[in-house]
Length: 181
Image (tube, rainbow, N blue to C red; front, top):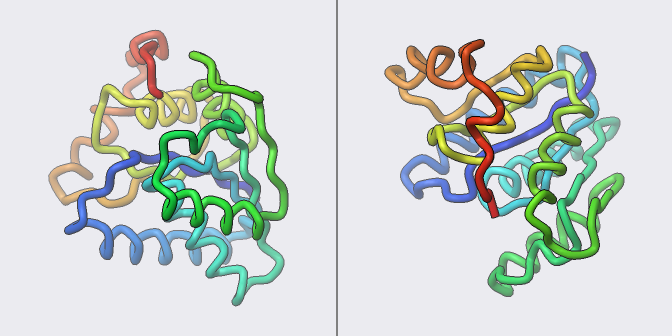
């Protein structure tokens, strides 16, 4: 086990952000201690950005770890704010490698990005709260491929129901076929 991918929602409620960041840092340090040295990120707003920032911060202490981006398309930031584009540009410029799947957005590029993230990893660290989401699709795909799933940012009640709600063998990937743009 030496690689990890991230998936999570674009919106993180402000009241959850600090606790999620701490949970992410503790989890990443634990994974690094267990030999994980390669991290794959999809470059989306929200959790992806938080995860990439955390990895870059940890590279100062653990310079051997790598951050790779697998991006859905070059136009991913077309509707983002200037501030979000600046953060994105900074993250990409400090990554070890950036792979872009498509020149322009198409209806499958987000799914393809998520599939590539899962294919590249042994562990999936996620911030998953909504069942009808691209994050839920990605976590279901990771579970089907027997990746270790590490959910973050959950209340005790959410932790108790996470597996049955999101990792049930009865969940079909086809249940998630919707536009996740």
